[in-house]
Image (cartoon, rainbow, N blue to C red):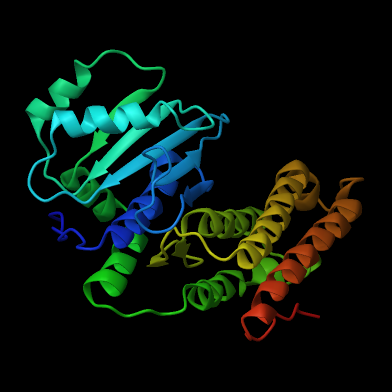
Length: 283
């Protein structure tokens, strides 16, 4: 299927938000933040991120009319040198089209204490085609102008992801712990990526990578911790769970049910905040 060609935004604030939404999955970290108020970069950095290894990444967003020049890039690099904490990676994201001579000129610049790279609009467009949740949000909010409540929407999809036997049914009624483990991992994936699959692994929806309110984010972090604990419990005790004759079978079943109930408690706190019905475990 050919790529969709998205028009670039016309507002700097929208471009910053788009770049931040893309940065989370592309950089592989949820620790992405917008710096200052719209258009107020700090030391040339509009979007900051902390990588999984603890190093810092800065992104400058250039809503460019025409071509980006090497002199502008040099100016932004000079600003980035003063950023605190020091950067390990500096990215200039631009609405300008891909420019091979400019890329070559950037590679020829003196070496910095951080790497320097360009994200042209062509690359950003490719990322949006690979990240349907980001693309959908961009089309809805920027191109069409609608503003659905993102936290409510996320919570509704989250409820769908958790409304399945793997979380509602007691361990003694589970017919396949391997399938249960897959269901738990699907939910973990949804919390991390926004992609939602059915029990038969059909892709049904994708939500954008975005920064929610602190309160909602804390709720999600608590839920993800509970889901990961259930995943670990299943993996560690899978053999004992599947073997009724194992001396650890009963204890493993009890431990798994405890983890399952912790997931439901954490999830229902999210749903309560969004005025959604709680999930009720099967008796």
